[in-house]
Each structure stands twice: as C-alpha cells, then as structure tokens.
Length: 227
Length: 392
Image 1 (cartoon, chains in turn purple, orange):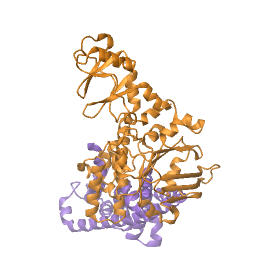
Image 2 (cartoon, one colour):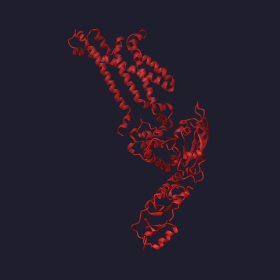
Image 3 (cartoon, one colour):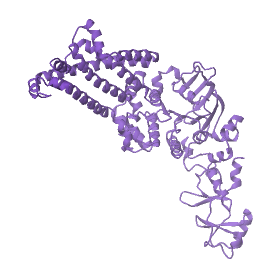
C-alpha cells in the first residue's frame, strides 16, 4: 500500500480523467509513435528474417548458425541492448528500432523455416512432378502452405514488440512508454495507467487482428471440420 | 484397339474385364517409352538402385512395375519424368530422349499421380485439377470447361469443386488426383502406388474405375505398386523387378502366371497362381455348352437319354429362354414338370471371371455354372473340367 500512498500524494484518485481529457492529443500522437515503431520493427524484421530463411532453406547448414545468432540477440535484455546501441546511434527512434528488429528475427526465422519444412513432402513432389519451376513452386505452394506458421510468428513478434516499445521510451523513442516514464518521474499514477493500459490494449487488438487474418488467409484450414 | 473391348466381342477372344486387348494384336505403334540400360546409383550407395534396365512400354498400355521394397520401381518411374536423373542410360519418350526436353515442359506433358494423392491442401478441388492447364497458360473459360469435364469423367460431383481436399474422403481425393493428372490430356500417365493409402474396398473400386477410364482414354500408363495382385489386375504387362533394380520378367499377366521365368518370380506371384490365372479369364473366353437341359413338358425318356449322353444324374429344366432349375433323374416321371425344381447355385454372366464360376461350382451339386446374359436369359453351362483346361 506504500506505493499507492506515494502515488496518491499529488492526486486523490489512481486515474485522473481530467488529465486524460487534457492530453487526448498527446495520447493520439503517442499511439501513432507506438504503432509506427511496432510496424517498422516487425516489417524490417520480417524482411531480414525472410532473407535469412531463404538462405537457410537453400543451404541447410546455414540455418544452425543463423538461428543461434538470432537466439543470442534475443537473449540480450532490451534495456541493455538500448544502452549498447545509444553510443552509436544516439537517442530516439533508431536504437529502439534496431533492438526491436533483432528481437523479431528469432521468432520469425524459426516460424518461416518450420512452416516451409512442414509442407508435406508428397505435395512438394506432386508440384515438381507437374512441372512447376522451383521458384514458382516455392511461392505458390511452399510459402503459401507455410502461411499459418508465418502468421503465427508475426503474431507473437508483434505482440512482443508492442510490449517492448514501452521500454524504448527510456532512450527517447516515444510511444506509450513516454507516459509511463512521465508518471514514474512525477509519482503520478494516471499516465502510468494510461500508457500501460493502452499498450496492453494495442497488444490485444493486434493479437485478435492476427487471429482474424489467419482465418481469412487460410480458408482451407477449416475445410476438414465439416467433413 | 478399343473395338475388341465391347460386349459384342466374339466369345473366345481374350477380352479381360472389358479392357482393350493388345496381346492378340500386332504391334503397330512404336513404344511410347523406351528405357535403355537405365541405371541409377544414389550418391554414397555401394550398389545400383536400378541396374541397366531395358524396357519398352507400348503406347496405350498399362504397364505395372512391381517388386519388393528396394527394387527401384519408384526410382525407375521418377527417371521417366526426371524427378530423378539417371546415372547412366537413357529414357526415350515418343522417340525423343527425355533429357533433351526442358524439364518443366516434359513434366507438364506427363500426368503424375502419387501415393497419398499429393493434392494441394490450400487449393480448392477445381484449382487442384486446373494446376497443369494454369501452368500451360490456358484461358479461364477453357480451364473451367475442362475441369467440369474431368470431374464428370472421374465420377465426382460438381458441387465438390469449391471445397478443399481435407473435406473429401480418401477415395474422392484419389479421384481428384487422377483428374488433376489428366487435366492437360497428357498421353502418358505415371502412377506411383496410387491406391496404397485407401482401404481395400475403395481400392478395388478405384482400380475398376481406372480400367474403365483406360478403356475410353487409351493412355500409356506406368503404374508402380508393391501389390502383385494389383499389378495383375491392372497391368496389360507386368514388370517384376528384384532388389537393385534387376529385371526378372516382363510379360502379360496370364503369361507371367503360367510361366514364371524364375523361382523369384514364382515366389513373388505367391500362392494360388492357378486361381489368379482364372481371375484373369472371363466366362466369355469359353464356349459354354448347351448342357443337359430340357423344355418343360419334355417326355421323361427323352430327358433320360440326354442325361445319359451328358453322363449326369440330373437334368436342367427350361421354359423358353429361362432356366428354371434342375431335378434329379430319379425324380422324373411322365413328362418333365416345372414344379419343385431345385435352383442352380452357380449363376454367372459372360463377364464373370472363371475364378468366380469355379467358386460357384465347388459349392453346387450339379458341378456346373449356369451362364445367363444381363437380361437373365439362359446362355449355356460351364463344367469344371472346361475351366481347369484353361490353366493346364
């Protein structure tokens, strides 16, 4: 109860609606920052992970080292990684973007490779036997059948990144984390609740959006149900 | 070639199960596929998977490659559409070496049906069937028309076209696989253990459907199977391979069963070779005799004389073209009456196999199988010695 006692020193309630109303514009700006950072991180991460996956699928021996490197990056605590990057990149958007991109790599790489590996052998063989060129087969068959795994990877990566973006505010990347920093520095609970709550809400919205996307993108997955 | 397959074929011609018979006809067409000293050794293996295989596959025939696992039958098949490249030797398709054709063009011209169907789970039935026409760049309307035609051909409902493979039964999926392979009307069809994943009842039906399709389409079909009975049932020729891709014997099934070239072949063909040969022959291949049969109302003396001539102690009773049944010789007096006749146990049609005729005979008191046509009209009788003569 000590915490709430401290937090309550400046305002009587945990959540001040006056503050929320007075900051509606800033909330909208922070939302856009949060979305931007998330989208760029996952987008760039996906492009790099796809390239790594293509290399891994073409040369199987590359997969181990690439997965290990992504795993090593993933294991660095986010705050530590920001601190390492800041001397090179300065504060703000860039160090956070770089750090967040590295966090998506392991999840995305693993899911893309596992998805393509999971394509039934006889399906690939049938495609070859019917005269698909290799690249065309990869796009139209392998990658298409790996969609559920790939979307699953994007879902986990996106939800993870939305959470981590809040930490990025410590090095000045903006987003909902800025509210949390503000609240912590002023012992004021409202921005902390607003920042944290909106971040959670955004994660939930994206999680559901990916579930929906999964359903729309893989209509065949439900075919077995009404057999 | 198909002319012999219709039901008006003269009795005595070898027409099995309505399929076209090539065994009696002179070779008029060049082989569709010729394998010449075809050899495959996988990297790191110390023996050939396929060893200097020479084989000619005549156009319009079903050739079944059969053998134990490790006999290279699937590898041989895959060298035809170059899913596997030979270590040495050549594959010629319609007189052209397969390696001279661009590999994708070659494959688009050869239908391919595989184990577990290999249907694209993410595509509807219509899109699955349309695969090769789409690769060939046909326009949409032509593709749609062809897809509908194929669905009818393989006996699926058009309502299934917009469903996904997972919604279909194993047998239906297999039919889609065949329709997909036939989509661009390739002259050659390769089938790799096509029925191994379906249950025996469905398998038997799919096999019959393939023979029925082949009667209409006259494709050159190379079929790989581990099931020698399937090879005998489907193949115009059966090619038996031994471990290491060594050719043991290539012959029409009846010849194979009659004269296995080696103890390996005899062993591989298994028990009951005589019965298997009978399963390849039809009642129409025999000339059923009139049998000891009299019209209702015939005087007993006449009936007795007929029984004497046939050396039997019973007589069949007919009324017009209907055979009513039979009665013991001791059971006759006055004239032959219709009342109280015993029914014949073994009743077959010209399409029945001699095996099923024999099966009926062994359970009967009269030791004959009665042949009736599709309308039930009496066509004659087959005796057990006439059947055994065919496999002697």
